[in-house]
Image (tube, rainbow, N blue to C red; front, side, top):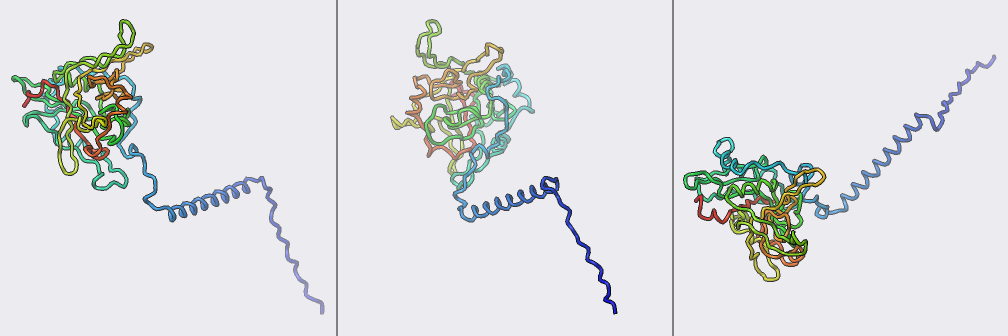
Length: 348
């Protein structure tokens, strides 16, 4: 009996794929990426298990604000409207803003710092304190951060005071300014405002204040050093805000401490009026106070409001500091009210 024939098993061979072939490169890339991602994930999980949450870094305060790009902060502003237009336009109902509307606008976008306690939470904007309940409050800029309080004087409507919706940007440390424009000198000023300083200037003129000149450091005739203090009508600067369950109103000087004399800032501000700078190459105009010096403590050549006493930048850093305990938490909304001396008895 012949043995049965066996069928040979066919030999299966894998096709040889060169190492440089595209399919090999794709497979290797996928493998490496997957391995790297898994390693990073394991490292992150290990970090979270070993690091207490209270030691995680917090974002900078500016990251929680409603900051949006606004172009070059030193770009020349549009020319302000004529002074007479402030009063004329306020007679229209569509331009009039009530105190309640101003409160809603001023409080919008307010953020609470990460990890803040109830004591540290930013305070909302209180209702504007009118000199007379019959007065009206009118927004003068699109941002609704600059307002005119309109009253009737001798039978005619008149701007009595100027109100600025500001926010606290510094509570401790040396000071060079009290109020700066948003995006400029927040590191050396207590409050900031999102408004064109040139419009604040025009609003003060509408309220009857006459501008003078900022501090002079050099005699323009001899070009030799010569100090002359700032001039202009006296402006009373008030702050109106909420803090620790109370609504408070007092002179802004009470937020500024003279560490040498152990007393609040003893000086008043005058309407220096800043200056308009013209670029000799382009002819473009720039209002100096928009660089940050809206209400100054040090002597600056571009100040809108300035102290008529000799206080250099170095002197201010060594002398004046924020009175922390009296100032509400960072990013609290505050009314800064500018009242010309002539308005003390008018519009009531």
